[in-house]
Image 1 (cartoon, rainbow, N blue to C red):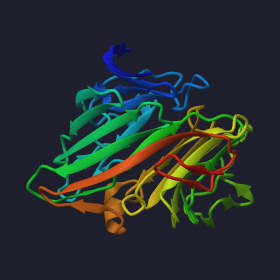
Image 2 (image 1 turned 180 degrees about the vertical axis):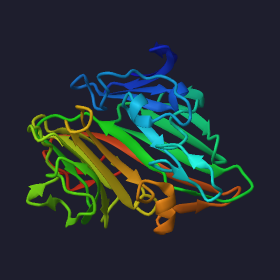
Image 3 (image 1 turned 30 degrees about the horizontal axis):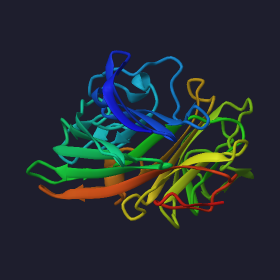
Image 4 (image 1 turned 180 degrees about the horizontal axis):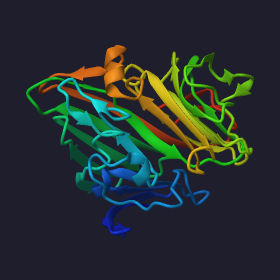
Length: 325
C-alpha cells in the first residue's frame, strides 16, 4: 500500500495524507506545512502530541505561539522567543513559518510519494522549501530542506526542527549529548534556570526517563556536546519508538522541553535539533551561536525520521533506519 491524497480537510484546513503500510502522515499546508500526525500503524497510534483544548487554525504573524498551538510538528525559523533582528524588526515568537501558508505540490510513483511545500517568510527575506518523501514498505521517511535568502542583505537565524511528542509512562529519551543547560524551568526537580550538568543525570534524576508523578514540573534544557546527530524516543513497554537522524554540524544542539503537567496541565516532550541557542535570536547572535545567510545563499539539509521496534533503549540511530539497542 502506498498513497498520497490532498482531498482532505480538518477543522476547515486542507490536509494532505501520505501513507504506506507502516506509516501515515498528515500535513496542513495552510498552517505553515505543520505535520499534524505521524501514525505508527502497527499500534494505530499518533506519535505527536495534540492540545486537548486547541484545534489547528490560522493565526496572525505576531500571535502568541503557545496560545494558538494545537500540537504536531513545526519548523521554527528564524528563532525561538520573540526578539529584534539586526535591523530592528520584531521577530515573532517561534518564528515566521507557523503562521504562514505554504504553496505545495505532490507527486507519486510506484515506489514513493512526496509533498513539497514552500513558505515565504514576511519579515525575514527567506524561503523555506521542504520535501517529505515516503517510500513503499519503508519504516522511515525523509525531509529534504532548502533555506534560501531571497533578499539583498544578510540575515541571522536560528532554525529548529520542532516535533512535539506524545508521551506515556515508562518512555525513554536517548540523545547522544554530554552536557545540559537549564534555560526555563518550573517545579524545581528538573533544575533551575542556569543549572549546568553532565547529561543525562541532573540532581540525581536520570532525565532520559519520562516522569508521571504529581510533581507538576516543566523545563527547557539545551543539550550540547553531541557525539552524533540523532535522538530516539522509545516506549519501553511496547519496545517501539521514533527518532530523527540529522546533520550534527548544522544542528549542534538539541533543545529538550519536558512538560509533566507543570505548564497548562500538558504532558509532552519536545526533542528539537536546532542550529543554535539560546531561544531569542538576538541573544544567540550575541553569544556567537546563530548562523548567517548571505543574499542568494542557500542552506540544504536532510533529516530522516525513523520508526523502530524491538529495543528498550537506543545507542545509535542512522539515516538508513538502522537502530542499535
